[in-house]
Amino acid sequence: MDFYLLGQKIRQLRNAHHLSQADLAELIDVSTNYIGQIERGDRKPSLETLVCLCNALGTSMDYILSDSLTNNTDQLSQDIISKLSTLSNAEKNFFHTTITNYLLIKNENPSD
Image (cartoon, rainbow, N blue to C red; front, side):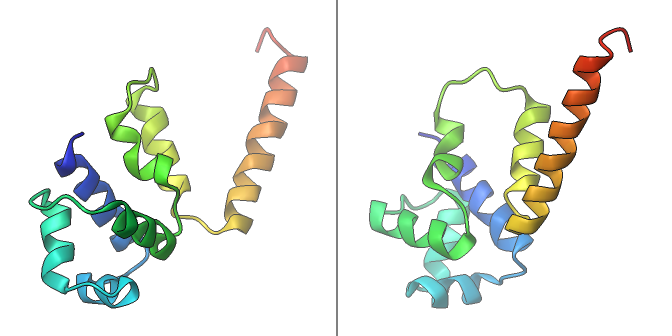
């Protein structure tokens, strides 16, 4: 597992939620220094800490750990998923509806 990439993903989500390291540390009852160490990849968070981080950041374990999995998702798709994960459910529903409607139109006019 690449703990540096895990830390970067946590930092990205923390920033997207406009949280400081101190804010996040307080939310999950750890030290600010520990959050910094996790984000730099210097410390390996426990499973319990990862669950707390996911809950505080409104994300899933599979998203947080996705860099350690082998998949065929291209970089653009990963970037889109990353950005969508920071949105509210209402905003996610908007984009889901937009994509669904786009695909319906595209399938009706395959030559376009």
